Length: 204
Length: 204
Image (cartoon, rainbow over all chains, first blue to last red; front, side):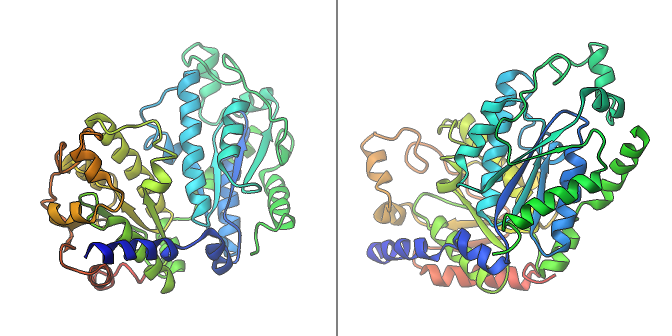
């Protein structure tokens, strides 16, 4: 029985489904689009539009964002520098799992620290991590203030708020920058989809 | 611009892809098969065989196991009771994300505490969490000892080893039990696939 089980253990290594096999059958790459930018810059809006857009052309897409991560996996974490780093580390690891599973994974987190984003890039295979800077003037983000957070931050009700009382470190080597200050979400989306399409991510 | 952005924010809630929509297009349910049992009981073997078997019939499957979680997402955790609980909590949250993404997700972790497994069950929608007890006599697990861990545990080199120096709490309400003590992996696999098939998980 022992020898038989060992033999089975050898078999199961061959029995797993590889990323390449998934991509071949799915007809598209497994990858992570990592959106980074200030609160109100449009990350969640773009992430969800991108998920839908990719889904409609047959690409298996999935969004990781505050709604499904901050209240679940990372509900034990706050907004201190250490907690922000751990927040991004865990999201990066989950994004890597989705990527290995052949999913077109889109993350929408402020992820203000350059070193945290670079750490996520490092755990991914070359080309699997696509950092997109969703740039937007702070004034404009504050004007939009979709969740009323800037108002609260200005009133001192939210400590360590990115852009107001906590730093945002702009990407230096993002694969793509979209500036939403004066651009409609549909336009930014088109730029992102074009980038993915011409980069070969949407075919296998 | 502010009003326009707010309007867009309303739109994106409609723009997300629902689990039901994923299931309809994929042709199968999104769910988690949670394998629990002693080290050496055959969880990883079965998980990988199940992934392959489902994949071959067109079901999008993915395994979460020690190989891709313990060295990544949970690399900061050890084997103390608290760390084991946090280990399972995080895996459960990730499994819930994969399930929401429409994936047939298979986890292979000892997950020795009943309360930890029940907590995972609670974050899932009814029917999405399928607890399968991979039962196996301790003697047989120890005879197999695929990673030499029992030998080390008996020699006192591994503290808090489940079954030897740490408890394993058998499931009381598992959806399915397979006993691998005298059953070949292929037979256990068939039982699991039958269960999923007759339970409607493999069609939409």
